[in-house]
Length: 486
Ligand SMILES: [Zn+2]
Image (cartoon, rainbow, N blue to C red; front, side, top):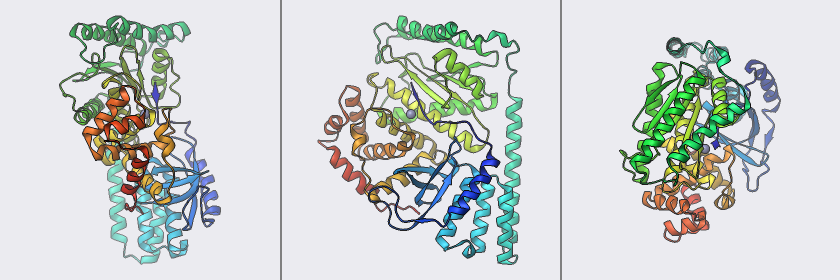
């Protein structure tokens, strides 16, 4: 089972915000000359604290930033984050402090600077901060910005109204919850038997564990097993769960009706992109009998499903893939959390990320890929399908540039097969994207070698005409040096 995008208990935003502001005020002009990493930046920078929307807080020295996001180093570990991944109050404060640092003090901020900060605050839905920044703008520019400020507010109000309308429509599309709560049993035995049922059923339907060239009879039997399982899911999770069938997915979901087309679209776009990447006929079903997907409208329902059907607590994720090596089965589960555009974007990225794991699980053999390759490929596909909507691409460019600039080592990654940390995903994505950009045919060959048991250095040598990991390291750095950043 692979899970990612950790989410922690969200803290009370306004309380944390106040604490944060005080901390940052005290720290803003604490100039640091080098983070504790060998070959770190020599130009002066500042320390900021940001709170990712997924929870927690990171305080570190900023090594670079641009319109997309920033890279900070904490205890020798670099983190790349897009502005839209950061909670509004702390994103605004970090932007303001970086700008003040660049100008040599808050007093040196121009009317244009305050106006830009005001606009950023509005994008973050922080009217209080915007009002204050626009106030400074007016004082400094003596009315020159009045029209621009008026337009900024107008656009903000229009956007708020549109979002409110969408939220209302989503609520309308909801079907009622289960009325008989007793139907959901928390019996431990019951929980395990449901999950085991599916594994057993797929084992019976596909005893030889076929991956490719699955015959129609086996597909039919697996499909029947999925349908029985889906019925059980509907029974346990209640009448609001519907089945939507697309070309390659069986989606059981309780999402508002009007959001379901979007869900099917993300999954099929992902399938199309991967088919193209690996030269798989798009009309073919790479899964045993389409891929079962379970999408829940709340954390409670997501966790209930994960616990009852997969014996997984579901506490620290918003989506996961369960793949079984012996019989080739794979299914996915997701939850919808929040209605802000940033929340929906995060969900889309997660679905395509996890969907890529599911597809790769079925490609060539069911052997597990080294985790960094798997995560890098998943982020690359999410970026290819969603573009700017997914922050992964921007994060990966920004982080790779720092690795090249400061000569941070990447060698250990090439030897590793174990799970990697979320902060390493942008690095993995950058290396995988680089390999892909050299030749898509060689990239396919690399995955084929890995799926037949070769180590990464062996597979690289085989697929890329004798390339060593040292050569890859050097070429990748060269490709990422001198890229545009801040
Ligand atoms: Zn992953």
